[in-house]
Length: 148
Image 1 (cartoon, rainbow, N blue to C red):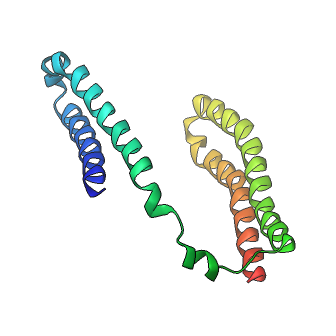
Image 2: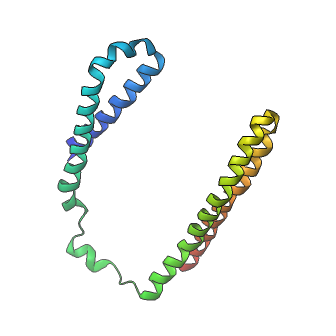
Image 3: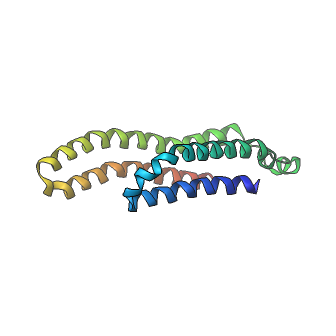
């Protein structure tokens, strides 16, 4: 299974190296176009093949053994509902932050286009709107600590 991980790592490393080479030497892009598409398709096929190989060959490693299953205590319905309730503040605050950031982002973009010196002020407003999600995450962490 290690050869699959190495194959995926080499495919990703090849993509990164080709991106860096094209960034610093854009003149070689005309020479690369002749072999770029076949190489990229080969890397994509190798990556997907390695992912499928990890999925099918690694399933046995991910499956729990019988001794491990016996050691895990049974979870009650109340504890399951409590864990679901811990995630609710994060979910709702993230939705609220998304609703807040949308109009604020559009308005700040329009304001910065008219007055570029207003960029700092608009970033503060965007940060305040995004802080809503962080407050929800903090509340979920505090609630999760109460469960243990």
